[in-house]
Image (cartoon, rainbow, N blue to C red; front, side, top):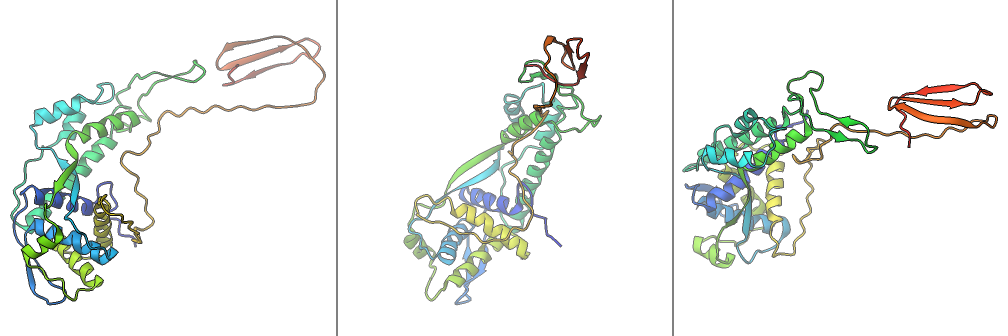
Length: 339
């Protein structure tokens, strides 16, 4: 049996990490996070921002055996914009074409606009992150249900030989037929509802000064202890306390993607996390629609020497070849373009 619960374009683990970075660095996530020291078993009391800084340090010491000097600057992704509904709607309208996107689709994509969170507990943070991921997936599904094909879009595309026009119309009578251009417009409109990347400053201190300020002791900790502490912090700070192999892999993968942002360190991370046989394509994958195929063949056959009196095309769908009366032969074909 395969656990595919987190095989989504916007995995919950990624959303949890991104929202943790953003809300903690912007003072929107407050409260106390409790974890036990893996060696002394002392109970550590951490704020969300301190938990994030310590987790990054422990991850690097545990997985890469690298001691970070400066507290890094991180980038959070897909943070919901909290502008007014009218502002967000106008932002989407400005980047879409009415031939492919309807007003109803933009309204459906907008949904209920996000509000600035004010989080005071771990459970509240987890519920907020789940709501962000749920809305991301809802909007993603709105994009995938583009109605442009059902609208009978009269977008005329001329074939390479300049003869055959292509129009996009209702596909198989399905009112929810997907349209690749409409989906692209909706995805671009969806991007206007989020801040794609936000640079977040964790601290201006070095790790030596920061560790001293919180009174954290690193004596006698092994690399395994660092990994244990990092994972404990992640689960407690994000509220994702149910530990399964699939969830652990997803969280580790999300953290590795964050650690890869450290451009000031010459680090190469080797990931051996088994994500299973399922392959999720990026939401902005190549789109295909109204494909055109051209075939060409040369046929050679023994025959007597003949001369053609005339060759003419009556229509694209018909080719008549007339040969002198000595042979008395004619041919009619279908879809054979004449150069």
